[in-house]
Image 1 (cartoon, rainbow, N blue to C red):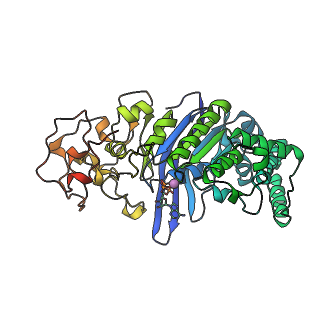
Image 2 (image 1 turned 90 degrees about the vertical axis):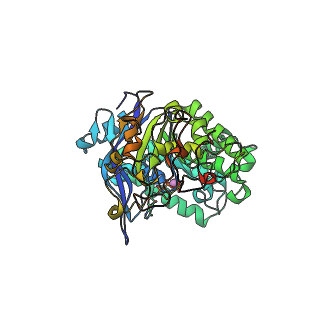
Image 3 (image 1 turned 45 degrees about the horizontal axis):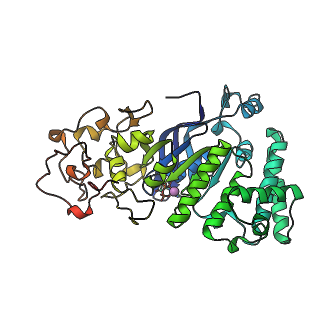
Length: 427
Ligand SMILES: Nc1ncnc2c1ncn2[C@@H]1O[C@H](COP(=O)(O)OP(=O)(O)OP(=O)(O)O)[C@@H](O)[C@H]1O
Ligand code: NI
């Protein structure tokens, strides 16, 4: 389903890693549609392919990984105009398929069209330069990029690398221009760093974790990106700072109207920030919809399990309660053609031995679930017997039963003591 407000349409995206052990299907035929100005969340357990999805959009997938299939359509009339002559197949109206663009054009979009922030701000800063210098540098790079026609932007990148090298050998306070220093200070102020004039002259190690996170956000905003991708931006921070950073992102989004793709394993963060959500499991989106669809009307037992393990943002429950069972292997050789959650699913039925498509689900027009339960009610007579997958972990059906199914008969035997379950502890 598409709407006229889309800024990004990812279609059939597959990203794989070609390792010694075999081919790893990190992201499989993924579809995502992100609307201009919204906060779209991707949530899922560790290893579900969230970061690889983000890196695929940013064109930052590293060897032995590669995007093997798909399209990433980005709505940018100016870009469409600029590339239409040389790459007619990459253009559809005002949309451009980023995967059809040459490397140098994609590179030029990083910072200006797309920016990314990470969990670990240290990795974004050079320890030998002041924060202000590095922000000024980012401002300059983007200024040069926007002043240059798309077709020749590759050169600005080389230039920026050269000036980066120069500033490394001359670690004095060498701001590129007084204007970019001004802008760097403005950016520090924008992200709520007190005394920005003084703090601009400090080195990254003089910043606290929260402050450095703010500085990294400032760096990402230097090029006024259309889309900000935030990959676990607050995971490493303590809860108070975490809340402050989320507020900051919220405010910046409201002020600038930028689109945010927020990646987290924390449904508390999702609930606080997002308009729509995709729940990821084993390289696929298994449920998507508005906040209300996913929190109140979810269909997929995996979503149910995640909700059961929702951590409290205020820290009342400090540890995630994991969903029983193991994250599945993404090795192509070990992937069966079935629902990828079936071996951990308390409601697995014979129907689940076929890989489910995304079904429309009750709720908003945006609500879809890759689960037969969107179509059929759970039927115990078709349930797969315990031990079907040779596992010992598959929880009994009652354990994930939500409040809407209070009457379900508990089975005779449990594979786990009740203390290990995630059901019945919502909120
Ligand atoms: N450099 C790599 N080499 C081989 N496989 C990789 C590499 N990077 C990622 N993968 C594979 O892709 C899968 C998805 O990784 P990804 O980083 O996207 O997970 P994630 O959902 O972001 O998890 P987390 O919450 O831990 O960050 C991994 O489980 C792994 O199998
Ligand atoms: Ni990740």
